[in-house]
Picture 1 (cartoon, rainbow, N blue to C red):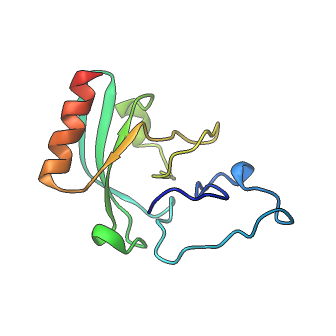
Picture 2 (cartoon, helix red, strand yellow):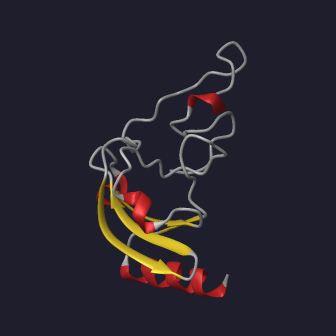
Length: 116
């Protein structure tokens, strides 16, 4: 969805700037972190790569390729929320990288993990 100049779209509201300082606009079609389905999963070195589908998201049929550095495979099954946005949160992991949800994007994600 891009980078917001005035605030994060992260679901962790501790990152949201004070309402009196900036206008925060909710973008329709933004992924709902509580409504997701992991369609593919792979561990490469110390990274976890996921193809995740967010039914509420409108671009790329709601699919995103996310790469996490600090997320173990065992932790994934217990997650009730998965926010695809980059943010500095203690409440949920932030992706290290995102790639276009295509076969080529998966290849790039794997190459990224192997090169780090």
